[in-house]
Image 1 (cartoon, rainbow, N blue to C red):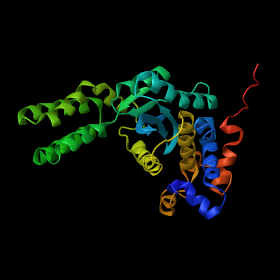
Image 2: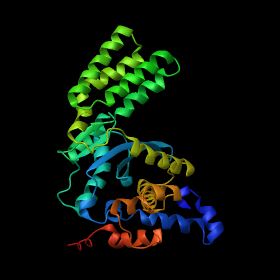
Image 3: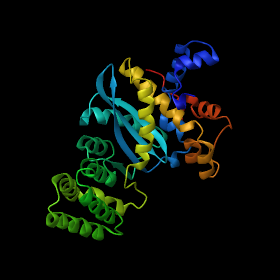
Amino acid sequence: MRKFNVPFWALSHIFGKNPMYWYRIEQSLGRNSIVGTTVRQSGDIPRHLAADEKHTRILGEKTYVATTVGNGCILGVSVAQNAGKQALTEAYQFYRDEAQCLQPEYSPETVNMDGWKATRQAWKSLFPSVAIVCCFLHVFIKIRDRAKKKYRDIFDETASKLWDCYRAESKISFSQRIRRLIEWCKKQDTPNVISDPIKKLRENIVSYRNAYDHPKAHRTSNMIDRLMQRMDRHLFSTQYFHGSMDAAQLSIRGWALIHNFAPYNPETVKRHNGFKSPAERLNHFKYHDNWLHNLYISASLGGYRSPPQNPI
C-alpha cells in the first residue's frame, strides 16, 4: 500500500497501531544499503547507469534528491542541500560506497545524464574512468517545450530531422547529420529556441557520441525519468519533507527499497517472463514468494556482506 502512497493514518485505520508506528517501520528500511540489499551477486551490479536530481523541498527550502538507477532498479538516492559540485559529489558518493562495499574495484562503464555541469563533475570525481553519455531526449524536450505551439510547422520538420540524427548508425554519420541539421537551421532561419539547443548539442557532441563506443549505454534518460515520475508522486503525496536532513534521507531510501521489491502489476509480470519485481528481474532470483519476506531476507546484515568493524 505504501508503493501506492497510501498515507500512514490510513494504514493505522486499517491495520491498527498509530501512524508513527508505520512511519518508523518505513524509515527503518532506509538504514539498509540500497545496493547491497537490491543486488545479490557482486557481478550483477549494473555497468550502465543513469543519474539525475529531483527537485524537492525540506521545510520549504529547496533541495535535491540525487538519484542513480540501473536495470530498472533505484540503486542510489541521497538528499543534497544544493546542486553544486561538492553537494552532489557527497550525495552520489553513497552509491559509490555501497557498490564498492559489494565489489571493491567497481566502476560503472557509462552513466547517462543531462547536461548539468556539476553532475558531470561529481561523477568524474567519484569514477574517473566512467564514460558520460548526455541524454539526447533532453535536447528534443527543450525544443518541444519552447517551440511546439509557437512554431508548429517548423517544429515538426526539425523534430523529424533531429530524430534522424539519433538513428545514425555510426559516430561519423551522427556528426555529419548534426552538422547538416545546423546548416539547415541557418538556411531556414529557425528561431533561437530551436537552433540554440542544436548548437549546444554540437558543442558537446563528444558526450553524445560516447554511446557508439558502448553499445549497451543508455542514450536517453527514459529509464530514470519513469522512476523519478513515481518519486515525484510519492513526494507530492507527502507534501515533501518536513523534518531533518537525516529523516529525509531515511524516508527516501526506504521508499526506494519498497519500489525495488514491491511487485509489478500482473501485466508487467507477464512482459518480464514472470519476474515479479525490479529486484527479482535484476537478480533472476528470489528468496521467498512473499515480496516483503524477500526484502527483509535480502536486507540481512543491513545489506552488507560483512558486519561493521568494532570501534577501536
